[in-house]
Length: 551
View 1 (cartoon, helix red, strand yellow):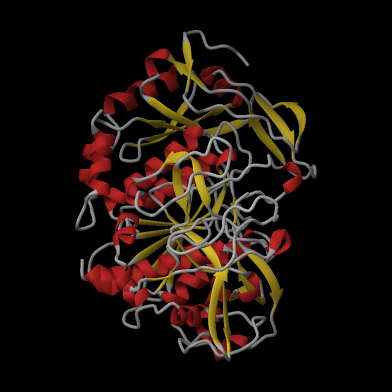
View 2 (cartoon, helix red, strand yellow):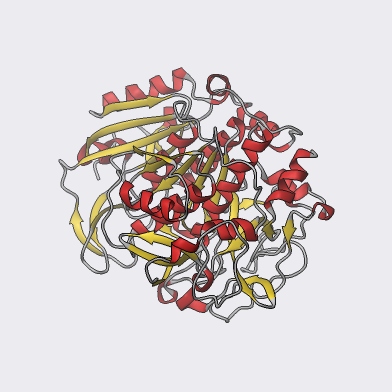
């Protein structure tokens, strides 16, 4: 690391550790080209407080115009000028400036970035030795003159930041889709899975409308789709294929691998669930690298997309809060606050590894973890259930099939404080030492067990896929349908969900099971009312719509 020539201070919350399951190869090549995102503060010192007030107290959902938002809550041009001057002084290129999003994209060599931000950049091989990542440790530094301006620096490190929350069960025999419809799920064994329209019926989605006039954004950090395959899936369901577009963020692109176990499974699951339930909506898929910078830039780009103007964003990627830097969680939470002001609903998968949220117990820390970005108070956190239809009727319990089969995420955030709208929901303190009184998640839940999963077409195969990855697009589609029927955007939905009276019948309370995936700590159990497995419960779409119409 070459020390900068002027006095510097660390960027709050930027500290990172080396990867624990990798092998250090040495310093990165000095000439390696990087793209880095710098996030600056909002324009006015009062902006965060005013924004929070607008988001938490509306009777009618907030939906600011993009230009108005930029004027009040975007970046101050003077701040942007100072960061631009800093970049030029350090031999860095300014690739793009996005005032409304408060982001500046810089380009340059590894050597120049290392000197400018006071970091050491090393190359690491993953535990399999198949991929090499650029890793930094310690804090990012900026000149003291920029300390109050810069809120985050992203992209110096390109380790994978998140994982997709889907679980494939097994391929299916061809032709199953020919029997799909919005009819009630037939009594059957659970091995067949459900088509998305069958689940829409099971959850009482509104019969009127198809999402016309809505745009639903999907964030993907890998994988891809083939239009012909999607067309075959939708026509097999007897549906007109929806309009689907893709956008490339930071070099990410629609790039199907042909392997259903790869991120292709996530991409096809998201698109097919949304497209089957809201076929009249436009779907825009934002592809970005699986890094903290790529994730942030994709989300911010979707929220501030003035051309497509999504009203809902579906996010099925995430990871334990402990794997994120504080600056990254604050930055993404800030983007979700932007969404709330612009009338955009954020739906996030709550995780597939129980309350520990750790896929590999051997490398875990023994604590419980909430999954981020679902743990943001400005996201609708979507948990998982097991929905079974038999001749005796329909039952719904907490999804927990152990480590091999997965379990719904959920718990209490160690990072985000408990929001005011959860104060009457009897949220427990965290089961971790210290018992933090944080934001509880999930907010809602729906079918996610791979054993009762979704019939999806991936890379030439019909499959049953589960995971909370399916629940985020399921509810994103419901929000789009409600928006269409209401003639307005629901936007920041959470405060209103928690205010709904039980008499509205909008939720099915899930009272069986827990999400202790290892069976070793007992947290957390389901129960009457809100719980850290299924939140308020599974949603009855038509009753929710009626309650929202009533005010």
